[in-house]
Length: 603
Image (tube, rainbow, N blue to C red; front, top):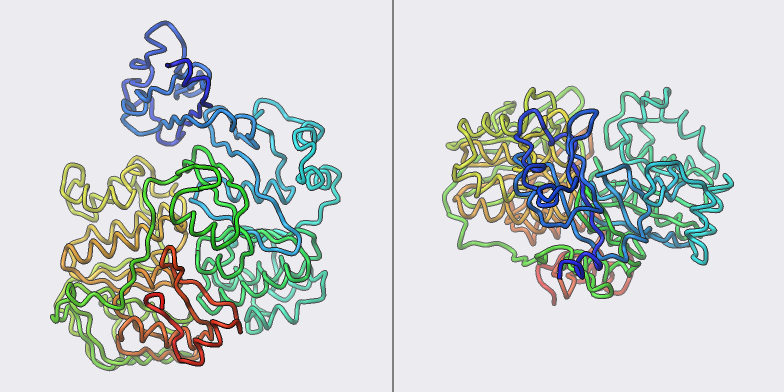
């Protein structure tokens, strides 16, 4: 039986370099390995640093080393044997690798959806010509002839021929937009003019709301401004292939829709467009097709076949690919949306406030009086620069209003929008600081730490965490603090689609079970739709005036907000997820006419 299983599987052994600490362990992986015990050398120490080196050929996949490693540094996975011939790139021995590639399509937007750390950005680099795939042969530099031979007889061969001979015209909007000021010095106008090969700068400036920052130095731009500038620069280039890596980050809902329209226009002009995006409502709105990328973050990624957007996103939420008969997640995500869950919300105020006002040199904020009840989750939405964070800081006692009173007879735990990575120490010690006690073996380990997926990060230095890891750690730390109200400013930022849904569902369960309250600011409408009971809508003129409503029922709040956006939502009949109706389509016109911009349940 062992032989037949080995014949049908392709072994993947990955070592987390940061977690492997041979000076702090008893080399359990080497000592307990059955192959080593019989005289083999399946796991040995690397001569340069004494860390584990695992032979994928000798490994039997027994999993003993995984269980014995005290730092969870080893991942061993058995994949279908046929995947071994589909390997596109591997970074090194016991390192990340991915299988198969998505296919660019002329005149269409192809979306990529999947976990963080699963190879999406690497795929963009390969397809845009920024990185030569090594087909898993990491120990030597392979030639383009080998790559072209591998793709002989496929539609990807001509794509790689263009890359090999340097004739590919690709434009890429990078994921890490905050690095742009390090690569380019000058103003917004200068950068856009430099790359305006299609003479579209003036149109893009208006579409993406860049007119007020044209003379600003790039080093002074906010995250959202940099993001929209990067989208404009990518769209202004004259290319065959366009790649947008997470174009929604830092942007509010209005700005996300503007970005989506710019991207769609490229496809309508006959170009090939590929988009990596975690905001599923936005991905649904702008994509024609999707590929799901699944696997084990940091270990391997596998690209699914191309699917229609509706089917692909539904399959992603189901965690199952029917065409390939692959289940890549042990649970499905369902959107069991109700307008408000009155039976768990007590008519007892956790916090209340009168009409509030706060003024800055060039900005005035007015907030209508309201109450946050015990057991209630309040969702806060609105454009950037309308005072949402200022309101949350006032409730948390960080800032004081100029007029009005806030009656908070409760402790508030506040997670700010911008995360601090300057903490000296590992994640375990940060959790200890937040909880004021060791978390391992305590009730919160099962209640919060494990469901939030933070336990496996315990040994990592906070300074070395990725954006998504840092966000999870920051949300977890805020939930560990003894409080009655949890105030979370943009908890979805940097998280992948799967983590966003999982955290939204966890927050809902946690708040209900503990009899607490929560206030959540976010631009991911799917997350707000999933988690909020009531809503506060921020309106006004960004950076000039902000006007906040009193808390209102979610259905009423969503209707008001979507009307301002001039978009309508329907419900997907399979998953219950919100889907944006096609602009000026039949459903869009019908819903606008009836005043129902938002549906809690399918009609």
